[in-house]
Image (cartoon, rainbow, N blue to C red; front, side, top):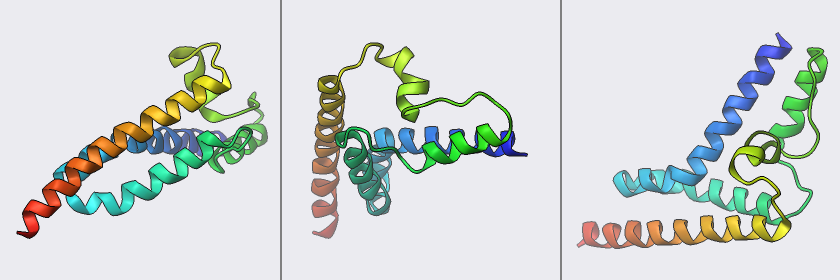
Length: 122
C-alpha cells in the first residue's frame, strides 16, 4: 500500500509541476483558473529560489518509499526525476535562470489574461 501511495504522490507532484508550467494557458481560456494558478506559481518560485528548500510532497514520497522497503532518494523531486533528463549538471545559476524564465513566461501569459479580462469588462 505504501508503494502505491508513493507512486500516487509522485504523480501528484508531476501534475503540480505541469500545472505550474502550463496552467496560465488555461487561464487564457477560462479566467477563473488564474485564482488557482497564480498561487501555485508563487509557491513554485519560492521553492525554486530557496536553495535546499523541498516541497512537502518530496519528504512524503521518500517516507512512503522507505516504509514500502523501496530505495528512496535524497534531495529534491525535480533534481531526482527530471534533472538527469532535462538539465544534467544543473548549477544554482541554472536553477535561478529556470525560475526567471518561468516567471517571465507567466508574466507574458498573464498580461494577455489581463488584457482579455479588461476587454470582457467593457
